Amino acid sequence: RGVAATRRRKSPPAAGPVDVCSWAPRPRSYVDDERTSSRRYRSLCERVAQTTGLAVVATAYDLTLDHDAAAAAVGAAFDEAAKRWPEALPRFGLGHSLGAKLLLLRAAGGASYAKLVLVAPNNSGVADSGRLLERFVDNFGAGGASRDATGVEWGSVIGSFAKMAGFEVSPAPDETLGRLGGVAAPAVFVRYEDDDLDSSAPIAAELSGASIEWLEGNHLSPVFVRVGDVALGSEAEVDAIAVAVARSLVRGPPRALPG
Image (cartoon, rainbow, N blue to C red):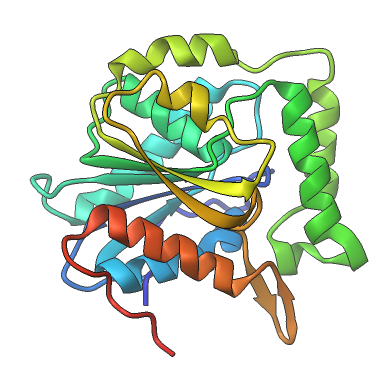
């Protein structure tokens, strides 16, 4: 099974409804991730590992207006975990929503990736990020879904957004686009037919040689959590993303997912 390896903290960060998966190749894959904020992406990371044979490192970050600082934290966590593999092995990056922006900031700042897979990348200001939080709460917070189930400390996340009122993210959307000329890695975009939070078009216009995969679903399709008999999200949509990612990264057909 695919597993994520990250450094532990005594308490999980107040994380938003997005995260980053990055990974390094290994003959077989395994997961070792206890961080609450990565739990919502465990199913996706496991499926990516199963279909590609790559070792997955899932990296979480604090919810903040300073996206450069968040990107640096993500990079530090990934680099620390990746020390177990030879430096000569290629590194790939997979990011969803704001997580995709963080990978782009890393790549624009000189981090080396063989390829980037950007799933419904979001390069928005605080207002649109608030809309994303609202949608996440509607989909996964309804019915009293607990922190243990979703990996979200709702009070902390909503409180963090309240503190952001009247401020703006850094780098701002236009500044982020202006930096993308420094991204050397080829990029594949995974987009959804029902997604008004996707920023793929303006981002792709700044990158050379980008390609696009279209899938059925919406902005939150990469998120899936199962607790007992309760499922939040769609396993079928997560499977579709894993296959699309594998198709982008491995030669030949991807491995079949276990039945």
